Length: 302
Image 1: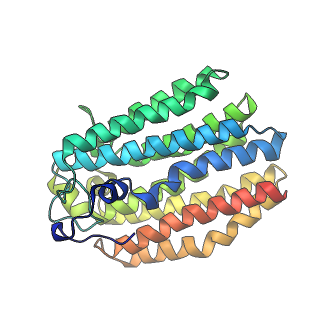
Image 2: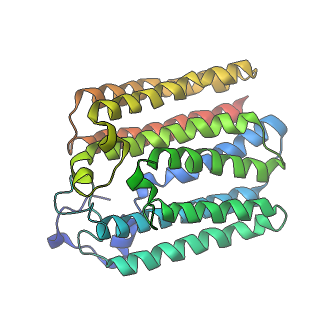
Image 3: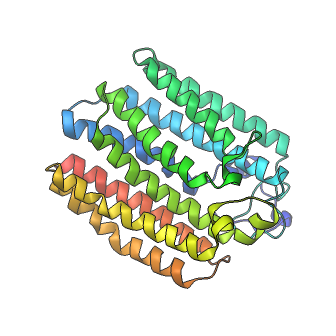
């Protein structure tokens, strides 16, 4: 799907809604479900297809709801303007009204909760976690204390796109939680936080004008670049955990994504915040997919 550039290229409504869901980012919610299920089977030979399917649908809907509410509320709060250098946003471009987009987000959150019910019948904890994820996904840019505007975006991503999704699905598959699920969740959360940090670094000027106090705005360009490099480094250092857990393939095979991580790091370091970050953003999203795919493959082969 190509990037629309102006209101003159206004797409059909179905395509505008599809674009607003940000398809290229949706793997951030899907991959933790797959990784948690694969890890549960690898360690304990426990697997439920119902849990996997419900988890995928629920995570997908909640992330779409997050993207929809973010699209509407960033426009309402004034951080998405004509000065935007990032990818086009449906509300800012005038394709969809902010009220309609918010209603779409509420529907997506409701569907995410609904899809968790078949699993929650046997594991009530799951329903509580899904409701919590939906609530905080809205509060990311909504409510009186929007997390993204207070410099808590990266923490939110690690907690929910890392530990919450991975841990909840692992628990639903096995009936318990252990440190391995938390380690895998942290790796995935850090990779997702890199994507967000790149987004914030690219938008640092517009966010500062809109009083959106991301970590990049609060502490500057150098801090934001070091943050991204730190997160990437920690992801691969955590592979030592799998070696200590006598899972050498889980420690070694994901290292095949290291060259791409180095490219993301070097391009981030050498490039000033600008529209050029859109390409780096794409590489970071690909890194998330590649790392998770290699991790999944390791679970299947070992």
